[in-house]
Amino acid sequence: MSAKPRETANVGAGLWKATGMWAWLLFRISGLILVFYLGAHIIIISTGQFGAGGSTFNNVMDFLEHPVAIVLDIALVVAVLYHALNGVRVILMDLGVGIKRHKVIFWSAMAVVVICFVIFAYVAFSYLANDVGPWSQALGVAS
Image (cartoon, rainbow, N blue to C red):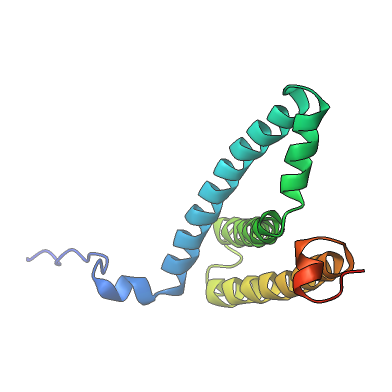
């Protein structure tokens, strides 16, 4: 009686084509982004709050209203949404509900993230366009 050969996972380049692998990788990346952002956020806000007087706090708040900071906030919203929705997908898979439909759940979550990103970016850039600052001047709507 001969033993069956042991099956191994495909660890070659074909593995990266799988939806589950991309979901796993993006989940880890978004988690790292959130951890680093939380640390940076605590440092920046505490520097502004406990720095050398009110001028430091005002400088920090001016920086946070800068267009680059707004774009980073939009990226943060995307990371939070993806991480949360993919976490729901992982929970469903752990419960056995989403194992056969994990690709559909992943792409549905990605669609929700894209839709929310478009809405949030539109609102953020509309706010920036109506505000006096670098964006409003660049967009030609400065008052």
